[in-house]
Figure: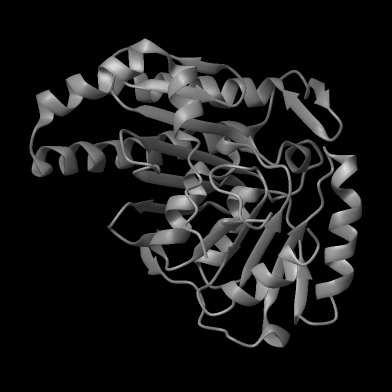
Length: 298
């Protein structure tokens, strides 16, 4: 099986432009030691956690003038609160790390200097938020020169549950270490399979997959937030998550958390390398089973 790296590194660097490329070299020269880098990542983790909680409090309090909603496409909405949440997170982090850059779902890429880049999804699951459902999250990741984010924070405001991980440091929920389940029997597994609502052309594949695995797994679920789904697999509450048509900001933070919890990821389409937007995220024991069942439909 080919090794899959979810970070679209070449595409992201092109998007960042010369500012980020030159910044990478400068940062390596300035920091120099692993100790300094580790301290920098720890500081950024704590800042990301605080920013996520502040944004969560903002979202739970809700807008004072009603929830204004605009459509970006089928089943893809943006509200004033998406923008407010993203701005709060960016302002909080920029104040503490003024040379860091930002890649936000709503505002795109902003270059501020020679630091790393924050990848922010201010509300993952906006439809849930609009309809008063709990399953929306704030997702924050940070990356430098590695092929994947160095840290990830996912916060579920309605239940005040926070997941976080640093690359090489393990994954945590509410400060307690988490691991993927060791379930190896498909019939006892919980699988989260999300429909590609924004991509009707892929719906037939989704229904074929759903019909195929439904009789074979223990339970099927969908909570409406890719970041949350990845954290549920990381915490051992589900064994697999499959979704078509995701964007990088949807899973950047969840990728770190899942992998640090012992989980695995693969593209849905067999023999594909790099970022495709279609992913399978599982525990170790059932990874081959789920990938083979899913690849069967391609």
